[in-house]
Image 1 (cartoon, rainbow, N blue to C red):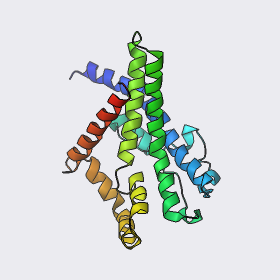
Image 2: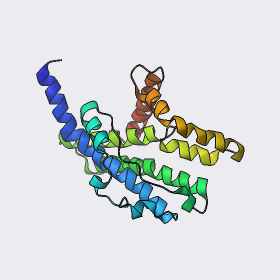
Image 3: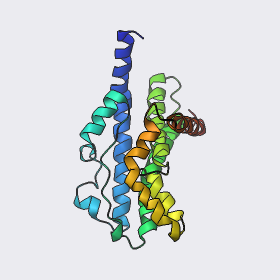
Image 4: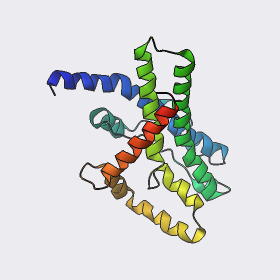
Length: 209
């Protein structure tokens, strides 16, 4: 690959993908904060995270990593689950709100593409496709049931009480587990990305892309 084509690809990433990621991650974190607040935990609101202002949700290192390495993260919304009347159930609902918000955004992109019929405007179709892709990928990844991802909290609420304690102990190994999923030399990395890719393709077909 030439330096010119590499530069073109990088410019595309910054101009097209990064704004979509910014919107997707902002709405994702806002959904967490809003749901937690509605269920009785004011922590996120008290810390200024109950907002759609992306600046409040950006992690500087995560944002830089996203631009350079195409993998990054936002600041997790602070949740005090002991403020919930039903700790495990409401924490699970709060966790689920993030991925659900991304699926709704992706669905909105599909609906707009279908009803407004942008077939004569391939650029708009492409932008909607990228937006839907990023939102679905973010939702799928976060639903993987390992800490610190949302899926871990969701599964916890479904487990018998006798197992929950041991499930919670996995949080001690959050960094190790997440690295096992994403690092190129990890034996789990290819299975993780194959799962995300296959599920993503299915969702995109359902949305008409």
